[in-house]
Image (cartoon, rainbow over all chains, first blue to last red; front, side, top):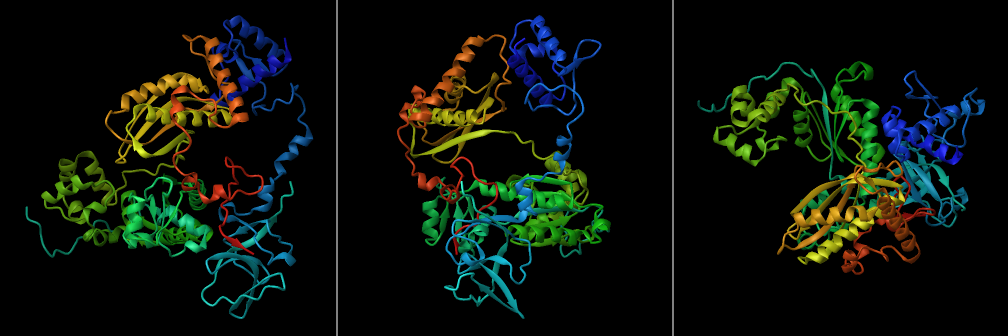
Length: 193
Length: 442
């Protein structure tokens, strides 16, 4: 039997299984495969079990070969030793998880202007900002000055806070009234392509 | 029976927190989200709803100047000329809402997502874990939300859901109210009946006629009185208000019913049947384009029409199977439309909601239907999408939606700031799932 058709049928059974959490009956497979007889289903099921994708119980009903839902259809795989390469994937983290430690408190800011150029932050960069961190000396923070977010170094001398740019052209900002810090910069993203 | 005057209220219960139920309610949620990302908006009278032509959420500053929810924008501008009106950014509000529930779940698994900006949670038994009293745990949740999200919430803690909600409402915005059992009688003493979630104007009028003026009056009447006057609900509220929990915290996350909806307001409002029908079918075409783009198929269809006076009618129908073909649903949409459309009425918008959505390809065929025809319709939709991809959206469309020409409302009025400020690699359809702070300057 044609392998593409087999793959497709296996995929449909898997989709049914992940949706219903049980294997389809023969009449349900008639619908799944869009065939008109149970005999056609039987033939296809025999080929699938022959490939080791599913097995049958005493009454001939389908049981899944592997209970971990083999939904990836990179090819028909024989049951056997799991690849050690697969075992290790549990220890991998996504780039999101690498960059962000508290997802609820993380925000984005697109950089405009060159005031942080000497800190390597360029206009157009996208910085990740975490709101729940208490800013410490030398942190880059997003602060609200005159109703606008601004990106600066945070410096605290005794009880006085000043905001410094990483560019000689800019003067030091000494907030007169209360200073609102919108968060501490934890990462900078620059996408080239 | 005569109402006693100057009576010292008696204790309703002597216990403090036999159960600890918290209600968290965001303060002017939509506008709070807006000013959390744009500091320029802080302390200004602002409102969202530009795309709908009515105020959907006024900020506290706007409310103080007389701007109310549901008010027409022209009217609101007249009352408060300095009002800043923003297009709603539901994407932003959903992100904030999801984050609020995640933060509460850090403290307790028993969280009920009551609405986009309201939650109930149960802290019973957590004192030892946090080595803190119930009110201080509740306060901690409230403060964490403010610190991490930059918006304020009002919190109420008491011994039943109805009481917790009453408590959170007692002090808004940014309030915190704790009502232990032994303080109930004081809390309810001067509480007007209409503050109780569940007492509508009719219940209040009926209770007033029976000499009940405050919530305390109500709970001091015998249980039979509550049942006789207001039935089962009245009895349940009577129990809840006395601190005996009847309503449970529904922790199952609201079933994520995946739906796709499209709606469009047309100005000026129209009573032309063909025009309104055309608008409706155009919305349906748009919804199906989105459905097919995500490789999904739908079964249910809701059609709604909003009249010029903002009242609306809606009806629902479903096919015998899932489908992703626009033409499969056209007849159904028209039938529902015929049912709810009234001659001589002016409509301002129409919309559709597709429901019972599944992955495409798992669609089963109906026994009584010609599978060849079903395939044909599907192929037509695919072909239509291909043509429109080359020649522009809606170039090829259902004949009845031909009456819709161009776009009557200004896109600038409808688009949120975020959709106009796309980042490298984002599109009008898809954006990053992290809020973007507004108005940056180097």
